[in-house]
Length: 235
Image 1 (tube, rainbow, N blue to C red):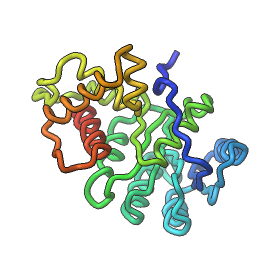
Image 2: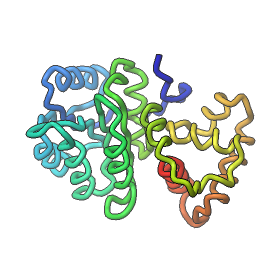
Image 3: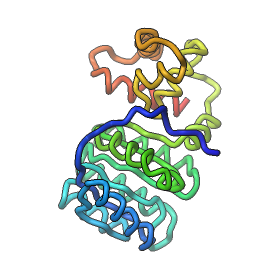
Image 4: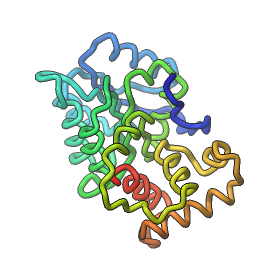
């Protein structure tokens, strides 16, 4: 049984305008129906990367759902189109779906949180997650709100690639636990419930993490949270 994405801590962004990009007609139409019945508006549903970029530039959606593998080679066209869309429309939120864990793809996507892409919501989930409708919709809302949501299996694969010089070496075991839960998209309240501690204790751990990772205090708390998660995943 797959691990849950997070302790239930639902984000309610209200109706969202969504672009869907998947060359599999059945899945694409299934997502259109799911999102429409959930009160959201699908402004475009396309089957290739070029059409995705055009749809994002034209519609400026609240979030896009993108399959990694699309025509013509069915390798990484969807991902490359998502990266291009974020270059053309900085901070545009993107939730990528993949049949399998592709660590290099996750790294490429996470790299768009800096530089010219200017941050913005990012998500990388296995397609199996779509069947868990509430979790999928919650993930989509989190990404649309500017959050970072990663499938636990993606996180596990990324952590296998730790470098010898571990930037997390100064963190205590509890701080590492908190940071790992942050990487799953959990709020401080959800982390507190998962670890059975107070919200205040979690806030203290988060402040310690920011300090030990030498994250700039002049950045917003949300921005430092994203930087901490990226440090965790790339360590």
